[in-house]
Amino acid sequence: MSTTQKIYFYPVWLRIWHGLNAIGILTLIFTGLSMQSSVESSHVLGFKTIVNLHNIAGILVTLSYFVYFVGNLVTPNGKFYIVKPKGFLKRPILQATYYAWGMFHGMKAPYPISEKRKFNPLQKYAYILVMYLAVPIVIISGIGLLFPEIIIDQVYTFSGVFVTAVFHSTMGFFISIFLVVHLYIASIGKSPIENFKSIITGWHEVH
Amino acid sequence: MNNRFIRLISILVLGAFLHTNAQSYQNAQHHQCLKCHSNQTYSFFNSVKGKEEKRLMNPYFILDTVAIRAGVHKQFDCTDCHSSEYGTYPHQSNLKLEPLSTCLDCHGGDVSFASYHFERIDEEFRKSIHYQKSGENFNCSKCHSQHTYVATARTSNNVLEIVDYSNKMCLSCHNDMKRYKMVSGHENPKLVQVHDWLPNQELHFKNVRCIECHTEVLDSLKVSHNILPKTAALRKCVECHSANSRLKASLYKYQNLQKRSEDGSIKMVLANESYVIGSHQIPHLKVASILIFILTMVGIIIHSSFRIFKKK
Image (tube, rainbow over all chains, first blue to last red; front, side, top):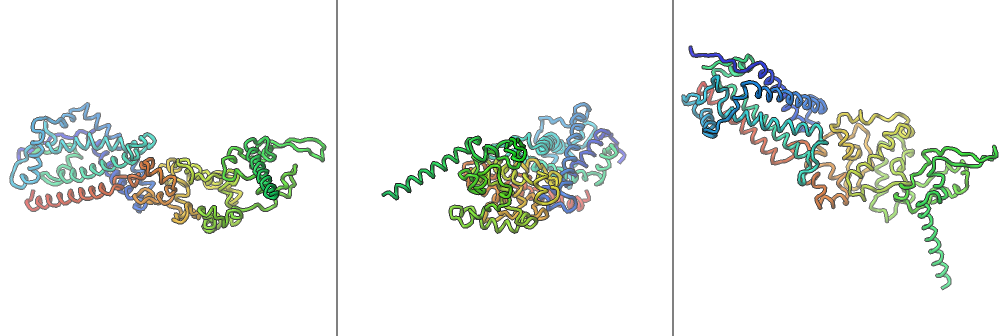
């Protein structure tokens, strides 16, 4: 216990981005699911309100994505996302084994976080996929659906709007699944709320 | 022999006469009626003042000669429907009071028009909000101008053209204060505001007909003609935006469009069974997404039970 050390992991800009993104994404998931089942589903809020909320939240997430993107370019935070080719698959598999089996059998965390390593390998891969693949696709396809006239009319025999809508909601679905897993794994720590405290205060305790 | 000869001559003369009529539509200036009724002005001899006078033509009495030549009644002459006494000029004022033939006067019970089901249309029309509100004052010609009507939905293979033609019939009153007020007695509702709830309003207006949502869909008629009151209008996106789209039974019911769907040009709309709103419109993706979600939740429940059990 005496080895407990506090690291200032989450600078203010990052916490602001994370907060805005959380509010935005939660709104998008709620309104997105509601729209998926169309007008009839919206007993709480009208369809039009749901659509407006979805558009506003989409713009909010797009803007906050730029904060994230630029922030990772100009601050040292970006280096935590760099993947080393060595142990490209071995490292995340080891981490997954730890979560599935090791942590219940006295195994020590294989990649404990430190000032040099903010994310374990599995976490890093998931964040890269979500933040540099899924979110940009959702943003671009979302802009397309907001201005349907810019979408190409036809992709082979399919309507361009249809293809865009399917891409948009499929990626949105994967982001939702990521969110569920993200929240759950965040509860793995010394105590279940430890990590949630950190993302609010910025300080992370390393044991 | 002599009789047959006379009959043949009369047919030829009649044919030539009909031919001249058609010709005269070609050149409005040579048509006895259109030489005035295609112009902005007309002249007449004012016998009271004893001089020739020029006046502006009532804009509602100016006819579009190009549209007439394309219309379904192009082979008829004006006095086939209007009184032959219109041949005298200036016209007698009481001619306006004469009742005109209605569509059913000619088309009712006509076997050559059986496929149009004019009687059934009349039946449906009598249930419509148009008839309920205005009664006999609302007749076919309010929407289908006898002078220029073209059965676009049956002949065109361009969906956008069909939609545009159909919507213009509605808009000719619903987007025209004077015409709307003449029939209803009050001002027309502002269409853009009324349809404010509809996402991508402009795209909808361009790609589907008003009647898609504002009439009952019937299997027995192409268009039911029972225009519903606005409270009964459709407001459910999934009615069209789903695998079993309502549009298949309405807009895409026309044979001319069905043929196109076979050769692939409409496939972009219908081949994928639906065209909006998201992945749930593809049944496999819907099932996959539900499965993935359930598996994720089961994984989390199992993992967290272990954590509670092992106190981790």
